[in-house]
Image 1 (cartoon, rainbow, N blue to C red):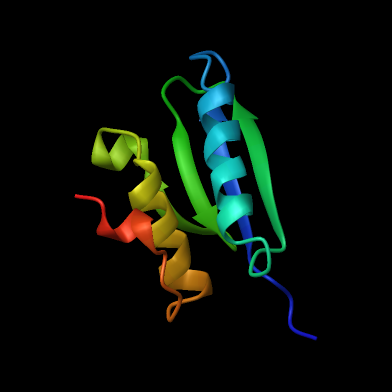
Image 2: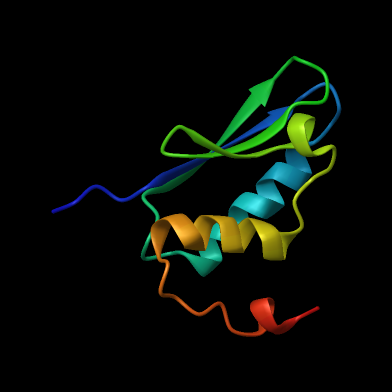
Length: 95
C-alpha cells in the first residue's frame, strides 16, 4: 500500500498564528480525508513564518509571496499534488 502524502504547516508562534494554521489544517483534512496521511502543525519562533509543505516540498511561503494563502488557493495547491483529477466543487467556482 502506498504511503499517503503529509502536509505540514509551519507557523509563527510569536505572531499568534496557531488558530489560522489549525483552521487551514482542518479545512485540508475535511476536504482530503481519504488522500492525506496527516496534517502537522509546527510552531516556529522565527517572526513571520507561515509555510505549507507537502511531503517536505515547499508549496506556500508567506515570506516569498508576502501574504497568507486563501483557502481556495491552499486547497488547489494540495489537490494539484495529491489528487490532480479531483474536482473541488464550489470552492473552485468562487471568484
